[in-house]
Amino acid sequence: MLVVLGTPHRLRELGKQSPDGRLRECVYGRQVAAGVAAKLQGMGYRVMTDYEPMDLPREMQTPNARLERQRELALRVNFSNDRCRRHGSRNVIYVSIHVNAVGSDGQWHQAGGWSVYVSDKASARSKLLADCLYDAAEAHGLKMRRPVATQKFWEQSLYVLNHTLCPAVLTENLFQDNRADVDFLLSDEGRHAIERLHVEGIIKYIESI
Ligand SMILES: [Zn+2]
Image (cartoon, rainbow, N blue to C red; front, side, top):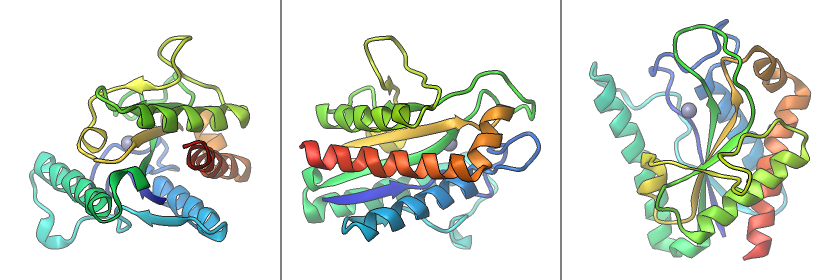
């Protein structure tokens, strides 16, 4: 099994940060991905990251923010699908690591908690992977967000989930515009919990298929 970790966004994508600037989603997500990769690799798992640099190469940058974002997402999907074609999509999983937000108005908000997303056309394996991550997050005592009592994952049409050939999920690791969530995310305890829940959820999935 090859684990592909998805990093979130780019430095050039504005607004993806806490109102006080202490947490930037693109930086935090890459730190979590690096920590998760190191821990899994230390246990013998094969792990890759879809895109490590903070920004696209200069020749792919453009003043058109939408176009640049589309280029970023295509690059991520191409990376995963190349591996799927090489190893077989049943032997690859994709876990994109994000931090949620209510808005991009630069204000603190009340909403908080942890959630996991699959595509609205998700496979049974994507849903199983989401359930494994949800259970791992819940075991760390995080405040959980689920759409209804009977379902642990949210279903949404998201580019990297819709177009990736292997089981694919996206985690929203608390809220970057909730003050208590940001304090926790930046604490040693919080960083440890966020890394561990990904490690434990991914292993639980691999061992259960
Ligand atoms: Zn994000």
